[in-house]
Image 1 (cartoon, one colour):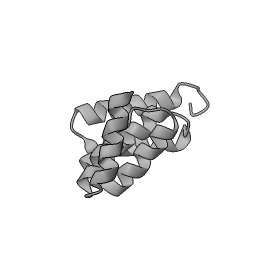
Image 2 (cartoon, rainbow, N blue to C red; image 1 turned 120 degrees about the vertical axis):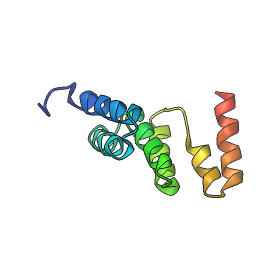
Image 3 (cartoon, rainbow, N blue to C red; image 1 turned 90 degrees about the vertical axis):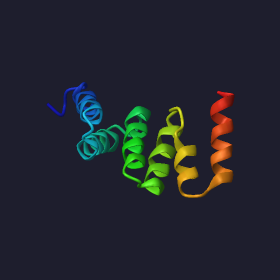
Image 4 (cartoon, rainbow, N blue to C red; image 1 turned 30 degrees about the vertical axis):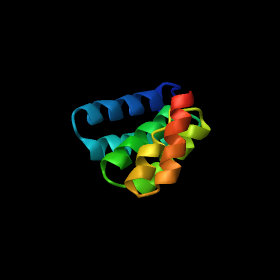
Length: 100
């Protein structure tokens, strides 16, 4: 089934279900799996970043959000910068989001 073009979408959607059920650890694993195997998919990286953010893993979330931004996702990186005290970088991210 891994060869099926929809396989990683299914894995990602499993992550969405876990996330909505409050099963953040399970969601994180599904999103990471999807992001690792479809590196060009911004949504996978962005969702993985959100789960890292929810777990308080802000530096790791910044990295995941950065990967998403490289692929044109809406950034959440500003929130993670804010949480680790990188306020000037957070302001830049928030301003960029407003300008979009």
